[in-house]
Image 1 (tube, helix red, strand yellow):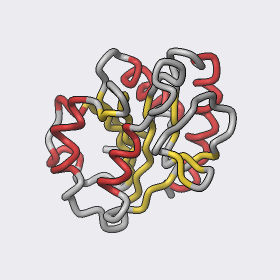
Image 2 (spheres, rainbow, N blue to C red):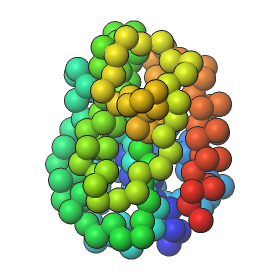
Image 3 (cartoon, rainbow, N blue to C red):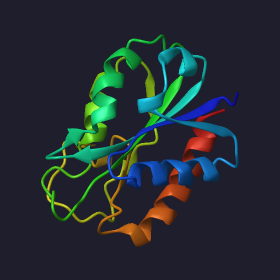
Length: 166
């Protein structure tokens, strides 16, 4: 078992694809699970968690996370760290872009150290509750409109996480 685990929920496949890219960037030092297929017992002993979710509807959390997140957030996170990424559509849902990560953040921020916040720079959208004081609470990804930026954004983010996950 690695010290890092990537947990994702994906409705259309994009979050799963991004989660696999994150795993590759950790050079094989991260395990990966779809939250639809796991139990808390399987993931409770990791030190570092990367949480990935799609954003559905108008800023809503992906369905599989809806069922898993409440019990996951009740785990003992002593000495652990969490990073969050969320997919969204910045054109069609410009006023709620990647807001599912804010749902995760709100559920977790008082229980565990959240890392991996990125500046609100280079994104095209109108509004998002996932931005606070010029920083995203995690990493927003737009595979619908800004797919050409995903690889670079992920590479920078994972390099930041590698420094946090020590």
